[in-house]
Figure (cartoon, rainbow, N blue to C red):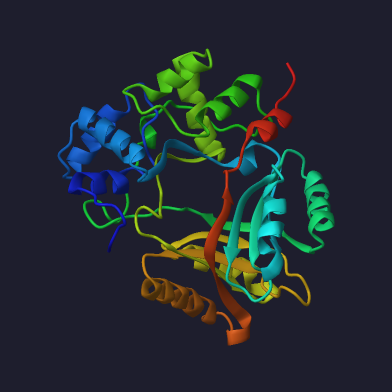
Length: 354
């Protein structure tokens, strides 16, 4: 396994240890370091803190802290594909990216649908408005591919070294709170989401620092973050790696034309493959796009990527006769825009009046 950055054994251990399960307590680096020592990695709390801070500053991490599940905060997001002719490619991309609702945009290898972007809105009804505007401005048709079923969103990237098979789970150290069925946010919860969406301060007391920043009590902040994780508003808490920095440069979106009656069976099986980071059911578009199951794989070389795609195919083939016409892999060739899902408008629209 290779990486694009040089990592020490300790740094590798930290990347592997806490891509989730980081404790939600006042001084979290103390129990986190203790758990690493119990797992055979000698490290003190201050060394763990400094290592996380250094990895973040060097770009090995995208951030440290909660990975917020935007879908559960409010609003909606959808994946959209379109064709940009070679002689108008830059013009069309500039037009698409000029819409603030477009959060991510990638060029992908496909003979027709070569531009793939995500539209994020506070009100789902605005998706059609945005796509109509893009079509009017570019003269190109858009193909909306909203998520119909989610089978997996688990973008974890491990490296060679200690704890390479996965990390440490210290979520049980947090407050004893029960999830609720609330679908809206209070103003205080909205403020918390916006304060943590880009990560936590990398300090001895990150949660206390967040509490102070939004003028809330530490206990409330710890309880709310813990509850949000249990409710699915936060997917996990820990180090969020920059997978490109770790050498995972082969970003393949495999797409499959799965018989409709098998989707709910096949989806979880593919999602269970450890190297599949995202797996969804999305709609087909007759005559243009025949695929209904998407599975994202990441590899550190073309050969590794090919092996992983073949494992996905073999998993599919256990359920039906997969032909060459039943699937494709679209590799990304350019990142055209990547601002992330901005939650301010979505959270605000989903905040209850008080």
